[in-house]
Length: 433
Figure 1 (cartoon, one colour):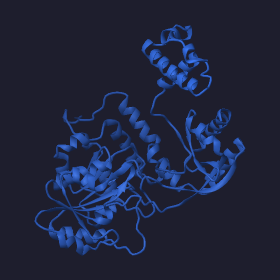
Figure 2 (cartoon, rainbow, N blue to C red):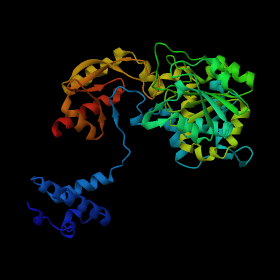
Figure 3 (cartoon, rainbow, N blue to C red):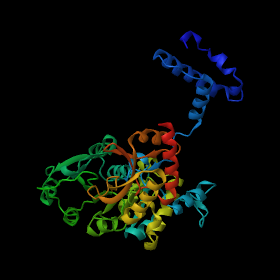
Figure 4 (cartoon, rainbow, N blue to C red):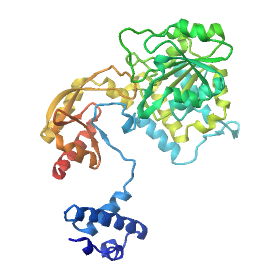
């Protein structure tokens, strides 16, 4: 076919198969199909059926952009794949609250306007031992709000070893600057002592800040003061100590500190994430002294950063599970984290048998900046390297890893119920490859 042989848009739209499609959508799809056909002809290729191309474009454009994927990467809290999958209890709360009206900002007992911040306070106080709590839309927002409310125009003291950059170019110093606080760095990248903090405290100092190092770790010739030491310094100088934990572990998970431990060690406010080791929705939680939490609540930024009703509902369902030690395995992230490798290998063996793959021992990761040095024994089903792309482009998309000339489908981040779906996806990918 030559370029001059291509039909016009109007001619293409007169095909009976496109007659029932919404005109504006069909028009955009026809233009996209014709542009692709021109590229194919210029490359010396046959563009194929243009009407079929338009139908495919219509299907693609009508498909939701945000889609469910099957995570076969072995990274439990995968930021690119939405971090923590929600527990059934959390999803049930979202459905219940989101399907109709709710008492989001209405006090049912008083018959007056209430606060959305009141719903989760009692749960968070029971979990952490804090006097009060507040929820915003993510942990960066929690830190931003804390510093804006407590230190705007004044100094925040933080160790140089904690001024890190995490995912997507997100830098801790940038958050501090946006809060309006003045950053005062102490120590060196690898060694910071308690005396370094004491040396810089002056009349303009407003807050001592400790920041979780996320995926960054220093080993070897290093030193970092214990939180108890910083707590004593903060108390002596009458300053609040803010501890940014990031990871969100409310129970014992490896060496990750919990909010309750931080508060007992002397932190006045603790900030952490809802969608990491807590296993809930994206959210930022602040717990601590009631007077300080109230200052955050009253700050104008709080309204801009507050969480919506669906986030609060999902977080409420997740926190209810966190209060019940017997419900740990109902939280997907914690179930995957603690599952015996024998169970993971059994899934890998079943998948390999279904698709004709091979079982390979591998290592899974926690992800999300939590437990960066932890290696979780895992097992994967290895299939052909060329299947990685068609698996990614299939329905549902399956995201694996390419290693040593093969595509690995790590079964620690797949459930028993998903194995048949992955097997079907592999068969479909072989047809497309």
